[in-house]
Image 1 (cartoon, one colour):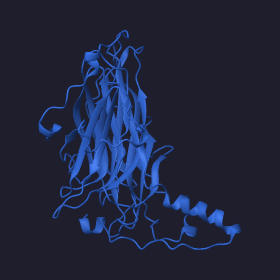
Image 2 (image 1 turned 180 degrees about the horizontal axis):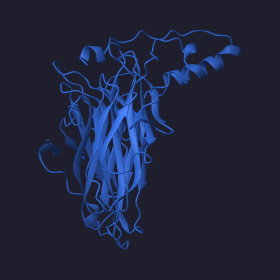
Image 3 (image 1 turned 60 degrees about the vertical axis):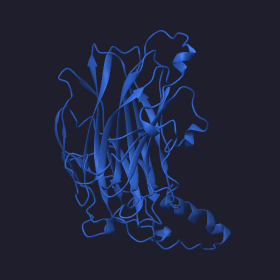
Image 4 (image 1 turned 120 degrees about the vertical axis):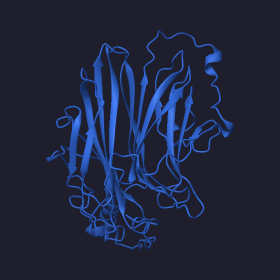
Length: 364
């Protein structure tokens, strides 16, 4: 879809209405349900333990669904002797009947609640869970954003093709579908234990000065036991809103002691963080359809490190580039667990080497 249709003129401000005390609380409750939170930071949950005798692995597959109501995802790479532990389908977009200028009193969550009724292989996905939304894009475009997750382990049985269908049809309308991501966690017998961290939510960003969607994203923190040796972590980020003409950065940082105020951590621009320049272009999905990106990279976790934080940044840019209107939905970390007996780590191990390269930047 052309950028002009994805980034509509700013919406008119919502009018403040004075009501009688007896009506104030019910109306405020409806408005809160409609407007949602500007941001819902990615919440982290972890899997894996040193007592396990089967290591885990992650397979992801993304699909761009701009101006589409679905498409085909192809899973490959699950080992023959592996068993599926979890399978999740994520999707992100607008609602086909809930715009920011609608009358708050007319908001009906049973109808205007994103797009929870999609199918996988012709089967309605069971018990869709809303990760975020309705998230207010006022000031950027006249829509609300949503993100959903569903447990599809009953449908996904291994490698093969899986057909997504039933997404809202926005052809010729202002709304949008960004895309879907299928994530499978498998387990293999007689392999080393593995740490898996899943960050899930709906974190909006529009440059660093979109006042109605917050000042940018928050970095989720993945915590783990420190190791005596450096380890390689595979990090996968999936998000909506990526376009070739936008400037989107990826940052990561490791540490020993948690930073102050970890719930509101931002590492973008931090001299101790590593910058990956503009890896998101909307083409890292299986149909190359744009707007949805699934980016995977390897990150070195130094010896002694106890956490890894990641962040995507919608960077303010000069024309002809435009700010990316990002819907950040997920981040995945896969790494060998440290299962050695806990020993005193000498101070040398508690001093991190600085990231390589001038300005500590990593070019992709």
